[in-house]
Structures are given as structure tokens and as C-alpha cells.
Image: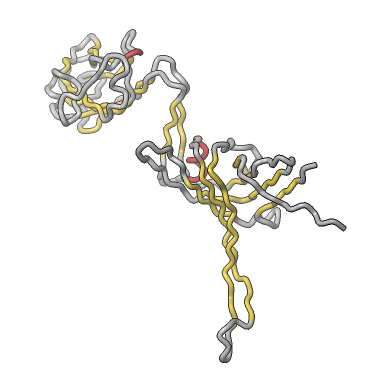
Length: 294
């Protein structure tokens, strides 16, 4: 009888996490650097007498972990591996301005005596710039604007920082009842309150601005009630030229976090770590399916 062909596993094709409740996939990871299932057993060795070597050894517990390097970061990755809560905003061809909120004091954002809100200016889409912005009351009726990043200052009309404190308004903007105040070069306007404007100098408020976009995900990490959902995973090696396919299915996986790297001229490639647990219903932790090519 001839020997069987060697089983050879090559590369990685995809990782698909799915719900343990109804089997629905969370999505699929295709841009992957690698993955590995590690099964490491602790052992109990028996020593005795003058023999320096063990007489016997038995496996105690086995730690099962799955690790992977992934080169894309979809929303579900943060949910499963960081216990995050994700809120999405639909794509907008005109841009998005968040609701402005008071940071210090309560006089800047006020429906009557301060700024009622921040809105996109008419025909201002071309000048919108991504970032978080701070409104600082200079006097009872004037404000300055500060920008926490200059990543899109060259979009539309150029913006520049006026000083090292990151101010972008050359002169304070006047907030007058009954009409909006345009912010130069930013494509937005500040809507005045309905009453007599009476802000407290030094009070501040902030808002976020996004130019036309294909969608926004806000990912909140570290909430008190956050959980790391148990899920299943199917992990496939690359299909070989002879048609062979190699799949590992993990039935009960708990994410263990991942780092988010921001390095100069380098793509961020998180390294995922997950615990693989025993599934009582299936009486196993994983199934390997090895299909021979024909």
C-alpha cells in the first residue's frame, strides 16, 4: 500500500467570528498577517529516590489560545476583543457637525443667552475640516475658536494656527441675537441664542466636525458595563494549488484585547489574543476540517 500524501498547510485566508446564539457572522477578516492556535499543557512530574529524571508525567491543564495579526479594523473587532460599544453615523455628502456641549461653565452653549448651536453654513461644505474644536468665551458677546488638530487645514480655504495655543480666529467673533455668525475658513456658523447674549469670559464648549464622509463609527472603550462577548470563529488557511482546504472551527472564544499602534509611516497591525474555552454542548473546544484536493 502506498503512503498517503502529506498534509501540508499553507498561509491564511480568513477569520470569521460568529454569534454562538444564532450562528450569524459578525463579519469577516480578510486582510490578515497570520493566525495561530496554541495548546499548551502543564504537567505534573513524579520524581523520587536519587534519580534526577522524572519517573512519570501526567498532563494537568491545557491552556488554549488563539492569536492573530490583522491588518484591518472593522467595528466588530472592537466589540469582540475590547468590549466596545459602537455607534455609527450614516454617510453624508454634506458633512456632519456634532452637537456642541459645554466643557467649562454653562454659559457658552445656551438656547437663550449664549450660542444655541453649531450648524453647517450655506455653501460651506467645501471648507469643512475634520477635527475637534473649542469655543472660548472672550467677553459676554464674543468668542474665539481653537482647533485640536490641523489634519485638514488645507481642505478648501486654508486655515492656520494663530498662536501656540492652537487658536484659529484672528479676531474674536461676535455673537449677536437674531443671526448666525460665520467661522472663517471652517464652513460652519454659530447660531445665537434667542435672548440677550451674556456669556461668562473663560467658559468653553466643544464640538466635532467632519467633512463629507462615507460613514462615522464612534467606538467607546472601557464603559463600566462593557463585556467581551463569547463567540465562535472559523479560521481558514489558504486554498492550496492542489485544491486542499484546511479549516479550524473554534466554538467558544473570548477576546483578550489588542494594541492599536500609531507609528511613523507604518500601517497599524493589531495582534489579537483570545482564550479558547470548552463548549459543554459540543464536548470539545475546536474541530479541524482537512479537505483533500482531487
